[in-house]
Length: 204
Image 1 (cartoon, one colour):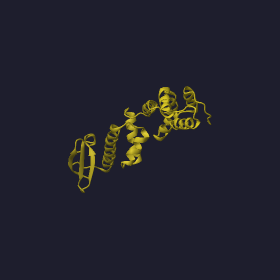
Image 2 (cartoon, one colour):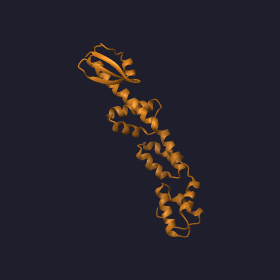
Image 3 (cartoon, one colour):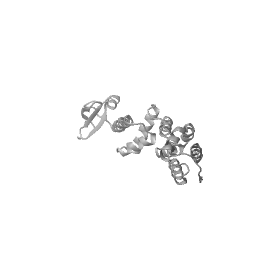
Image 4 (cartoon, rainbow, N blue to C red):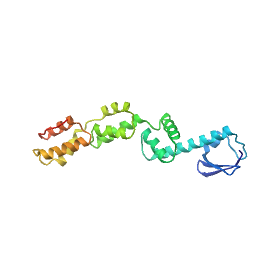
């Protein structure tokens, strides 16, 4: 199949037109790598290579654009690419390419999440839920959870804002439940409430 025209549609983006009137969106990198030009006869093998290269290069650009907005895990990126219309194979290719080039790293991302939630006063339980939701491998969880600091000042501030009477068992129960929902263990909650001289019973 002969190429009848190659035109630029935007910086780095081109459209290749063939003799049958079909058009394929691609990138400058693909056209350059495959040495395409108007009038070239593309055999079946080259044509298939061109289609795959075009899909991959366009998907890589889309992935980089997505990552430019916020950091995310490998799983989240794949999910977002599929939502944008990429098939699973192309999404996996992009995630692998970004990982190989150091542009996405689940270990670093998990550590950043740990620091983020610790700074907001959440506990390991909340971080564990977030790691699971974001598709982080369980092998990464242990190191991340162990490195998450217990911020007693944040916990104490949370309690002080909500506990008006340390002798009111119902208030203590509600504060305890709120802290548990924020991911803190019962041991952390007991220690924190003891600093406010609260007395309460807990069910582990």
